[in-house]
Image (cartoon, rainbow, N blue to C red; front, side):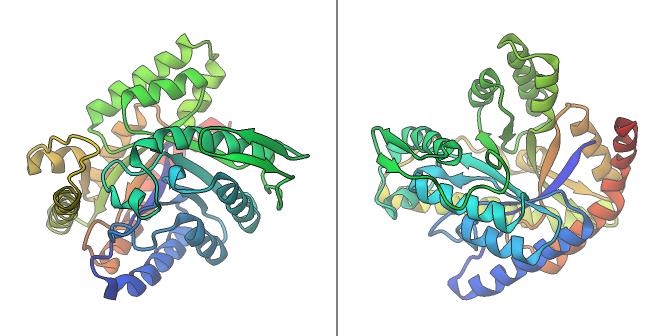
Length: 354
């Protein structure tokens, strides 16, 4: 059965709105818990207001305490900005607070806002190497009952046994983000599931097919291939309303405003710093809507989700609250999705269980 989750990636454009938006995020998490959403994903972005709550580890504690059933995942924690032992401890604590409801999504860090690195005193060009070394340290910390030593490029560590131990043994589920086909194929070689960024349906099909082929070519058996596909996720922006016209009316302006806000921010950072970490080619606005936004009535959105289901991926990370969209509008979209779209995929679960 295709799993559905919510990416709580909520912007706050002005400092004066931060407290209100953070409260609304907690209420949205409670709603998702009540409606049976599989996972609530949290982002990490600093200094720009694109992610109102900023820090997924701190915010995850609040969400886990406020909910009962829903899993909480990182999409993703920017590992290069953290001391790996500190992050490993925080994750172990969160795993205990949630009694196993934590999914640890890891990534190197932003590819757009150099202020996030400068604010932490880190050279952005080191992000990839820092991520690789930090992830290895975290895995050692969780799985070394007598402590361990590490000498690397960025950290020289002699750590005793980590406390608290993870609730989930040997450690919570760890997922890695892959924003390119090359990254997805690298994870396939290792036999690891992944999270894909927003892509068109055709690009999603192509990448997942290549990922599946690489899993098999790397010697992973059918059971491992099936497990990796079932544990991988794709990301979509989603707006549901009673009619296609209403979904377009509320969804397209919010999506376009979100995209424009992020474009302006990136251009401002470049103008101020003269540093562009990636070269962007921005397609026409309508093309972005067509490929990056699923919007419509419950029937229309269910049909789009069925197309994704046929790719064989395990789950969809849905971003419901887009840009300046009011909380009440996003919450109604979530209700419609979980009561009239998600049930369309339940019969597959019953068949699989037999």
